[in-house]
Image (cartoon, rainbow, N blue to C red; front, top):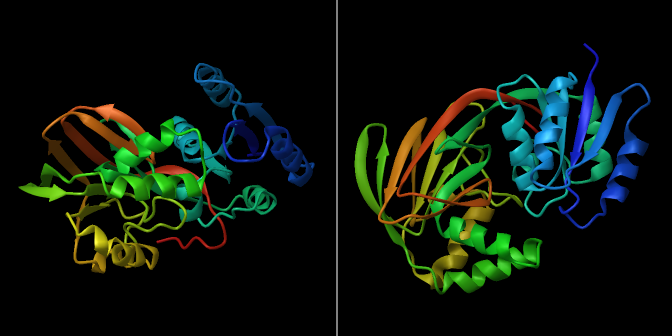
Length: 296
């Protein structure tokens, strides 16, 4: 079957202008590969894009943007047989990094043309699809502040995080994991399908996207003076060795908190109720991977 690629471009993601990105795509795609480019104009426009994607027999949906764009496109093609590709131009690029894709546009387009692919798991949180991480607590809090921030990029994310470290207070959660119910006071709880948030920031380095289970990472309250030690563990892919970190594995789990509030899915903030349910969906998404990706 001949491949048909639809590049879905978010003009608001990254620092490159969409015209520049489209010029690079046109230059790098070989003449024998059929493709089309569409610019995602606004939220309502995505319904039209979805109709084009599914009615015109496209084999590949290529998300050109950041983690939010990738999540939206991936959620559209999960369990459809349409393959997901990523041209990462966002701040974190969590799924693209986890799939071993290049952060250089020219190189990643060549990887997309090559078309090496695997099937990975996805997750759902209260019915909302996610592909890298979801959770509650500090990271969801930061996600909401970052989404509302005028400044984008890694430096803005770090500045917001450092400021809020001194303000945020841990909360009490009830967890039901593998039939066991228990309580934890936690700074954050991350449900990880992939190992990282983005920018190679590995909260769950032992997680795999192909084993049908989540790694549930609980960071318990800690002395803020020890945050640099915790960060070194995370950046060194050793978060599970930190004294304030507790890890569980499960294909399904429930978290109940004392009040409604924010969660995040792939970094996108979302307001929801007290009860939060997570479910792993094995081998539900076919994705294009880079040379550095190691299949399980």
